[in-house]
Length: 408
Image (tube, rainbow, N blue to C red; front, side, top):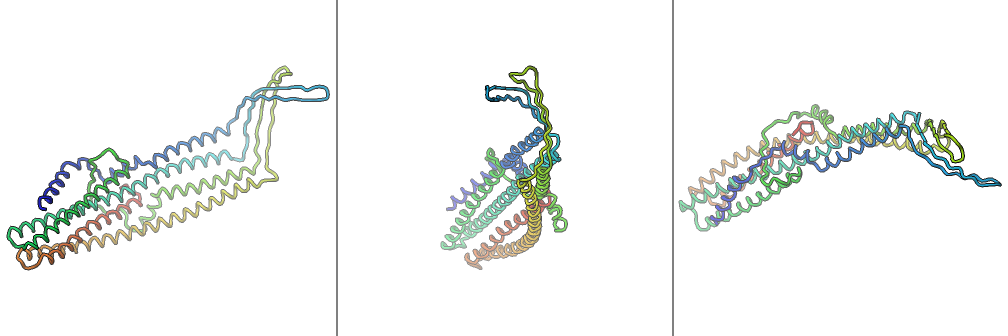
């Protein structure tokens, strides 16, 4: 049993020396994740199409040139005549009620909004990395706690055995206790490895087998009061900015729909040749078009754009309310976790003193191993809880910085 434990610890420390050659900070993980986000890369490709849409809109209002060929038959009582012709047709839109202006403005808004969509995708990665990173640090810290308790208990066991203070039953008791520690250490080692894998998968890093993470330095959030944090969160949230542009896009769509009720003026000019006539023929005309009777399609388009605008305004109000609730919750959680962490540290100090006393009593045969076990388990659980609360506090503090626009 003892050989197995020593071998286990020897491999652990050897692994710690050989690996961990490439240590990544939280900032480095986030930067890599944002740069290699699958969702963001897809959106960037899609965004290129919006610029092409704008080019298409501009081109549609330029004069259109088309080669045309027509075959025509005329018939009367005496004969049937075939009169084919061919030429160049030129069409130009002279007036459309400022439709071109509003369509180009709408296209510009869509292009601007596309950049916020990239920021939303990158922010999603940033939050996922933060949670995965602090989860990994929690497992790493708890892993070290279990190692420390194992070593301390093994040392106590060795001292008591050398002094012949333990009965065979007591010796078996300690061996079982140390075996349980080994199992817990192994479990936490696996959980930590899985947590590191989760970080690597989140940031799309697949070629770094020696990936290891660094401790997050102590820090204080930049803005911890609601009256300061919420206005900054409104500015920093790309989802809010994107939704505001949705409202502007809906307004432009409404203006475009209204131009469909206005007259449009087109100029058409066609120079052409006819088979049975000599010389170049010319046709020129000015076409004025104005919807008069069945204007349901145009009015429906206006109403639809108006409804879409109202929907986007309501969605923006809801987003702001949700953001307010999120900031309130983060600040409250941060205060709560800070308080719980301070309490846990105080409890840990007291339980550590009791554990030290219990160890001395065990060495002096003034207590039983079972009583020592109760105090040890309590102290160990306090240490594990303190690690968890430490990184829960850091997570909430980092979240508050994230929401207020501070780069993590």
